[in-house]
Image (cartoon, rainbow, N blue to C red):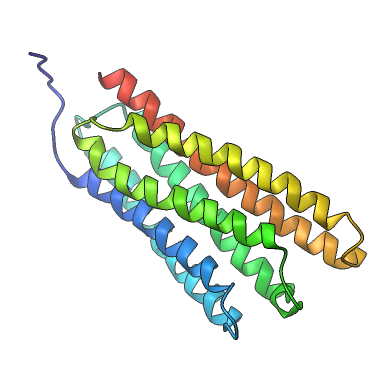
Length: 208
């Protein structure tokens, strides 16, 4: 039987879980943009509120790291995981902000691929939120990082299709530039979810 001197204190796990739950709130807000008659400014403002809450969670996590003598696992890994979860939220907020500021939702229709990318992000967010509480036991995590990586590959495929559509001549040059910036943030969010999953895998391997 393996014995560990590391504490099982739950504060770190709770902070990771709260941060991941905010990512679900973020992707659900982005999904609202597909609804008819949506108040885009309201969605953007609520995304900003969630992002500010995530910033506070990250700040609390860093304070906890600095005030805890023995952490549940390596301090560097705790810091990295918290930072990466915050990065995802930053990208999600940027998507909503750009769509609102550029007035892109006023187009007759956003590209289908954009909504497909948001759906991939929503799946990644829910997987991540389900996985974070399991860090406490370090069990049943492998399916999470495998599926999250698969979804990142799916996101890459959709992003390539989105770029093909943007440069097909369907949209004017200025709209293409604006949408390309949104597409870049969507891809960055998808990649950031994969980075979270890869970090969880690294932690699980170290602690096994």
